[in-house]
Image (cartoon, rainbow over all chains, first blue to last red; front, side):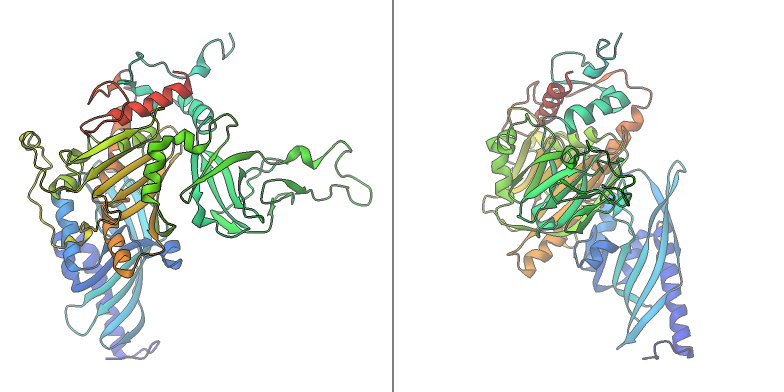
Length: 166
Length: 414
């Protein structure tokens, strides 16, 4: 399935909708505290990275979360549930429309802007993170899964800590 | 009664001469914070400025802070590293507005006053007026208005600066033990592989103490105990310089070392977690000395960490009595192969704002700050492992914290 970039055929519209739904489901999973389902959005040999735009554009490879396998994602959830200590809080993601850069050989490359508000257990709320997702998505099978999701934050500054994934 | 007579300028008084009691008001008193800016950050101390690797070419500069004082660090045309205040001599404007850049000279946006890369004033727009009207008066001399300079020193690719003419040279300031600790980790040229910054909702000293605190490590950070990265029962040491302010602690990889007394403490953090993917902690002994963790601090603002194969400089910046920023500069080396680079990136999950063993340090300072709100009349007690600030071969100790207060009190006159 290789719809032309910029074309307005049904295939592309359907793909955009489907990727938008993937993004919404991903955000809901985190925001609804169903984090045990989060790794299932990824293929086994996946990559998930949280970094900032300046570092990413400078070619720095480090991420404040750097996962190079689905196992590393499940470890993040396990540590969050059973080891790490932090005040209870939740996120509310607001996710923009997805834009597809290209589709080739069953892999869609897409980008999506997002905000994440952090709501502390006492109700204090803060715009915690803004940025964009740069994704490579396996669209050859359903459900779609991320081969790679790069979370590129607009700012290098994180307030206090980051323990829930974005 | 003048301010000096009233003793206001002498800083908070401590309840006793013992190092093991710290009045809570050190973390909350705004006047104390001001005294720290003067007596510590602008006083006889060396503050980390940047990496040599950030200003490799003549004309490169970075803008940073010493305490809250804005400074510029620039590589001059002769290759020398210069540091001077980021404040125009004319009307006090900020000269460099961004974090880094490259210029032949520094020009103020406001009235065009120009400085060379050593902070020397070289140009004043309309100095002689226009058509013989205006201009600077005859007694004006550019030589009277050069920017205040800091002394600069380098060690293993780290650049330090001081406002003080009195403080001893950097290596004497650090002492031979800590110099050795820096040279051990940065034994070849480093390169930056990542950066991140944490905003900490607490006084800077709460983080400074936390880093020197080997007591909390296996309790607050469950990850450490569970995966035996840094059990307190593993062989290790705390090395503190004579001033107390600089230190490093080490732990060696010895999985065979079990401690019955330690297990009996039934620490909450000793759980049965098993990683699905071990690569975040799977190390190689890159220094060949079995040291798996080395945490080194330079008073007042720098940490150099080696944890397994993740190496970073942490820069602590005070931003108000109850707020600070911690910048993480993650390092690799020029001779890292792809496997080592990948290993460093994976071990990087242990530290930083989302670090498996660092994220708690991000929030615990804020918890203390909140508990002290309008309830800061008492003192904290810091007597684990004794009352001194001496080097020790065990890490169930707060000796390095006592060392911090020893140096702090010497500087602030408490």
